[in-house]
Image 1 (cartoon, helix red, strand yellow):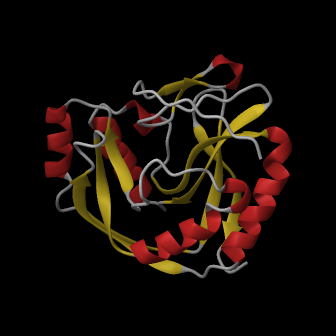
Image 2 (cartoon, rainbow, N blue to C red; image 1 turned 90 degrees about the vertical axis):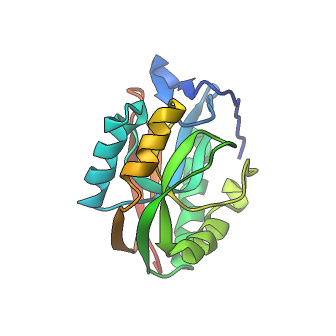
Image 3 (cartoon, rainbow, N blue to C red; image 1 turned 60 degrees about the vertical axis):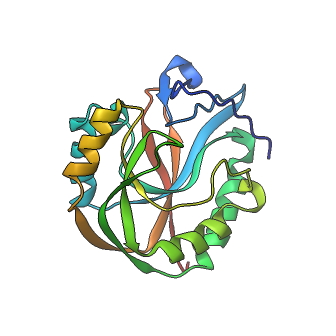
Length: 203
């Protein structure tokens, strides 16, 4: 699989079709014949709606375009021709993993390394790490910019005062849910991330 990535601190990338695509702290720009994908554990409702509403309330533009999730493979540019191989790999990787439970508890930050506030995983982090190791290999074995640290982002690329507020307001946040599937996401020309296929853990 051929992948391309150009990193900046702008937080945006031009997606196929000309849409402005916000992908997070780093920009990933697809080349000709490529598409931006990501692999993640979707936070289920009602907690997804709560966390997305919090994110929008802080003024984070990604609150309207990125569903609440735990990232396994960050935005990655792949050739459309390689998508069948990506899907086959994900089917094998998720079949080798079993369901588990995640508990969210409070907020923390990656500052000063990156301007991100997130909700912590109090349980399920080890299972997420095992799953990430299986998923982010082979055809999706891209280089990691940072060590894997499972989390749910709730604010990023904002002023320090806003990030401080996010940490304070979500300090007591808690939720728990069972994880039984993983989603392959694709960035649309409208700048929104959508699930295009779901893979059941354990097959």
